[in-house]
Length: 305
Ligand code: 13P
Ligand code: SF4
Image (cartoon, rainbow, N blue to C red; front, side):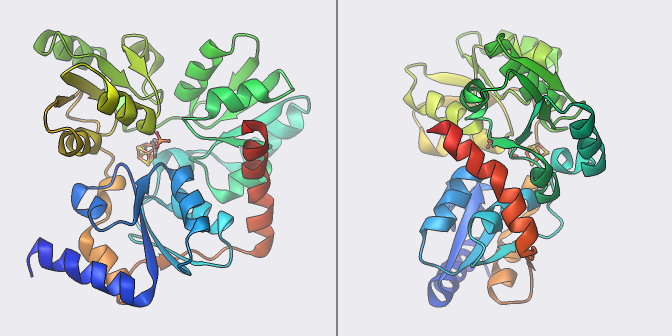
């Protein structure tokens, strides 16, 4: 079978079985092409809750499939590749955060959406990279403990000097691979291209960027911008996706090493096997875990209004 035939078979099967396929923006382009929706983790879980399909396949990493299940507890949710985890979400130990919560009773605990359901359960408010500044600004308490990404946390702290934000050591190993040398080299090679960077990068690199934003914000900036070329400081799949969307512009990877192997792990064959009932993993969570981990997501929605 060639790629096109496999994609056509996936599209036929998903229609026949009433399955909605979600793909995070960092998925490969061949996965984008068979997905019903592409976006960031929170946007995708909102979409999953809206659609009529009762079965959802998430092409992304485990915490994303969990978030879909939390927002759509009555749907059957599959993670297309069970081995796709997020090292940042898995970094933080829920016992450590529970202890910190006890030690810091006057702090509001804010979790990046890139956390496990077990951690969300302990936290007060959830944020995404697009909503973090706005949501944290709207939290009435000025004392905030932010987990697990201290780079995103540092970026938010700089936007909100009025808040006292404590950080815990953690971060995304993919975005941390971008170095100063990469920035200097890219500037020299493409002097007219602005550098667009994700706040999961190290603060010393973020300060060298022309624009800082979430993946969705980076894509929208590059699509709408008047520059003819852009240097992309986030997961490298975005360079290719932007090039397909805007063939008249040029996009360059800031670092050849900014590749998330967990995100790239999902293949068309994983999706096909999942649709055939011989692959993927159904996300099973207790009612108690779903309702307790949902509270911090509901709080984000309330504070974002
Ligand atoms: P966003 O899609 O919210 O920018 O998150 C980036 C990321 O690392 C997802 O795993
Ligand atoms: Fe996790 Fe980083 Fe990969 Fe996103 S890019 S899934 S935060 S390791």
